[in-house]
Image (cartoon, rainbow, N blue to C red):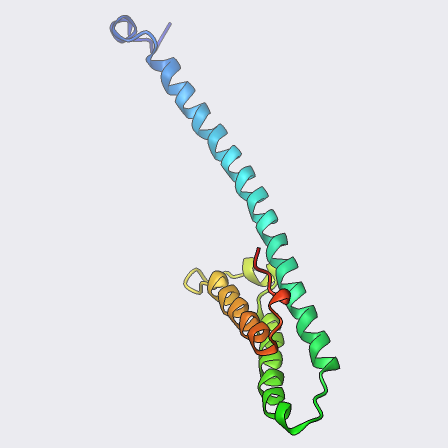
Length: 139
Protein backbone atom coordinates (compact mmCIF):
# COMPACT_ATOMS: atom_id res chain seq x y z
CA UNK A 1 0.00 0.00 0.00
CA UNK A 2 1.76 3.07 -1.25
CA UNK A 3 0.86 6.54 -0.05
CA UNK A 4 -0.51 5.33 3.27
CA UNK A 5 1.23 6.86 6.22
CA UNK A 6 0.79 4.32 9.02
CA UNK A 7 1.69 6.87 11.65
CA UNK A 8 -1.14 9.19 10.51
CA UNK A 9 -3.46 6.21 10.19
CA UNK A 10 -2.76 5.18 13.78
CA UNK A 11 -3.11 8.71 15.15
CA UNK A 12 -6.35 9.56 13.34
CA UNK A 13 -7.88 6.53 11.60
CA UNK A 14 -11.07 8.42 10.62
CA UNK A 15 -9.45 11.49 9.03
CA UNK A 16 -9.85 10.31 5.43
CA UNK A 17 -13.48 9.27 6.00
CA UNK A 18 -14.21 12.57 7.72
CA UNK A 19 -12.79 14.60 4.81
CA UNK A 20 -14.60 12.49 2.20
CA UNK A 21 -17.88 12.78 4.17
CA UNK A 22 -17.45 16.56 4.50
CA UNK A 23 -16.85 16.94 0.76
CA UNK A 24 -19.82 14.74 -0.15
CA UNK A 25 -22.04 16.60 2.34
CA UNK A 26 -20.99 19.97 0.96
CA UNK A 27 -21.80 18.90 -2.60
CA UNK A 28 -25.18 17.46 -1.56
CA UNK A 29 -25.98 20.65 0.39
CA UNK A 30 -25.17 22.84 -2.60
CA UNK A 31 -27.39 20.72 -4.86
CA UNK A 32 -30.26 20.81 -2.34
CA UNK A 33 -29.85 24.56 -1.81
CA UNK A 34 -29.94 25.16 -5.55
CA UNK A 35 -33.12 23.08 -5.87
CA UNK A 36 -34.75 24.85 -2.91
CA UNK A 37 -33.75 28.24 -4.31
CA UNK A 38 -35.16 27.40 -7.72
CA UNK A 39 -38.45 26.26 -6.17
CA UNK A 40 -38.71 29.39 -4.02
CA UNK A 41 -37.89 31.59 -7.00
CA UNK A 42 -40.61 30.03 -9.13
CA UNK A 43 -43.17 30.38 -6.36
CA UNK A 44 -42.31 34.04 -5.72
CA UNK A 45 -42.25 34.76 -9.45
CA UNK A 46 -45.74 33.32 -9.82
CA UNK A 47 -46.98 35.38 -6.86
CA UNK A 48 -45.51 38.59 -8.32
CA UNK A 49 -46.97 37.80 -11.73
CA UNK A 50 -50.46 37.25 -10.33
CA UNK A 51 -50.22 40.46 -8.29
CA UNK A 52 -49.01 42.56 -11.24
CA UNK A 53 -51.62 40.99 -13.52
CA UNK A 54 -54.41 41.82 -11.09
CA UNK A 55 -53.28 45.42 -10.70
CA UNK A 56 -52.88 45.87 -14.47
CA UNK A 57 -56.29 44.30 -15.14
CA UNK A 58 -58.00 46.62 -12.65
CA UNK A 59 -56.20 49.66 -14.07
CA UNK A 60 -57.01 48.83 -17.70
CA UNK A 61 -60.65 48.09 -16.89
CA UNK A 62 -60.94 51.42 -15.08
CA UNK A 63 -59.22 53.28 -17.92
CA UNK A 64 -61.60 51.82 -20.47
CA UNK A 65 -64.74 52.41 -18.43
CA UNK A 66 -64.06 55.68 -16.62
CA UNK A 67 -66.33 58.48 -17.77
CA UNK A 68 -67.09 61.35 -15.45
CA UNK A 69 -69.69 63.84 -16.52
CA UNK A 70 -70.17 66.50 -13.86
CA UNK A 71 -67.69 69.32 -13.24
CA UNK A 72 -66.99 68.30 -9.62
CA UNK A 73 -65.53 64.95 -10.55
CA UNK A 74 -63.74 66.27 -13.65
CA UNK A 75 -60.69 67.44 -11.64
CA UNK A 76 -60.55 64.20 -9.71
CA UNK A 77 -61.01 62.31 -12.95
CA UNK A 78 -57.89 63.87 -14.44
CA UNK A 79 -55.81 62.85 -11.43
CA UNK A 80 -57.24 59.36 -11.48
CA UNK A 81 -56.65 59.01 -15.22
CA UNK A 82 -53.03 60.14 -14.72
CA UNK A 83 -52.53 57.63 -11.89
CA UNK A 84 -54.06 54.86 -13.99
CA UNK A 85 -51.79 55.59 -16.96
CA UNK A 86 -48.71 55.79 -14.71
CA UNK A 87 -49.64 52.48 -13.08
CA UNK A 88 -50.09 50.69 -16.40
CA UNK A 89 -46.83 52.17 -17.71
CA UNK A 90 -44.94 51.08 -14.57
CA UNK A 91 -46.31 47.55 -14.81
CA UNK A 92 -45.49 47.37 -18.52
CA UNK A 93 -41.94 48.55 -17.74
CA UNK A 94 -41.47 45.78 -15.16
CA UNK A 95 -38.85 43.40 -16.57
CA UNK A 96 -39.84 40.00 -17.83
CA UNK A 97 -38.01 36.91 -16.53
CA UNK A 98 -35.98 36.80 -19.75
CA UNK A 99 -34.90 40.41 -19.26
CA UNK A 100 -34.00 39.79 -15.62
CA UNK A 101 -31.80 36.77 -16.26
CA UNK A 102 -30.26 37.72 -19.59
CA UNK A 103 -28.18 40.49 -18.05
CA UNK A 104 -24.55 39.79 -18.87
CA UNK A 105 -23.20 42.95 -17.29
CA UNK A 106 -22.55 42.17 -13.62
CA UNK A 107 -22.55 45.85 -12.71
CA UNK A 108 -26.08 46.49 -13.92
CA UNK A 109 -28.41 45.31 -11.18
CA UNK A 110 -32.16 45.47 -11.39
CA UNK A 111 -33.98 46.71 -8.32
CA UNK A 112 -36.96 44.39 -8.75
CA UNK A 113 -38.07 44.77 -5.14
CA UNK A 114 -37.95 48.57 -5.42
CA UNK A 115 -39.87 48.55 -8.69
CA UNK A 116 -42.52 46.28 -7.19
CA UNK A 117 -42.86 48.51 -4.11
CA UNK A 118 -43.37 51.60 -6.29
CA UNK A 119 -46.05 49.80 -8.30
CA UNK A 120 -47.79 48.69 -5.11
CA UNK A 121 -47.69 52.26 -3.78
CA UNK A 122 -49.17 53.58 -7.02
CA UNK A 123 -51.97 51.00 -6.84
CA UNK A 124 -52.64 51.91 -3.21
CA UNK A 125 -52.84 55.59 -4.24
CA UNK A 126 -55.36 54.63 -6.90
CA UNK A 127 -57.58 52.75 -4.44
CA UNK A 128 -57.50 55.75 -2.10
CA UNK A 129 -58.34 58.17 -4.92
CA UNK A 130 -61.26 55.99 -5.99
CA UNK A 131 -62.36 55.39 -2.40
CA UNK A 132 -62.43 51.67 -3.17
CA UNK A 133 -60.32 49.97 -0.49
CA UNK A 134 -61.86 46.61 -1.39
CA UNK A 135 -59.74 46.61 -4.56
CA UNK A 136 -56.60 46.57 -2.44
CA UNK A 137 -54.54 43.41 -2.21
CA UNK A 138 -54.13 43.75 1.57
CA UNK A 139 -54.67 40.48 3.36
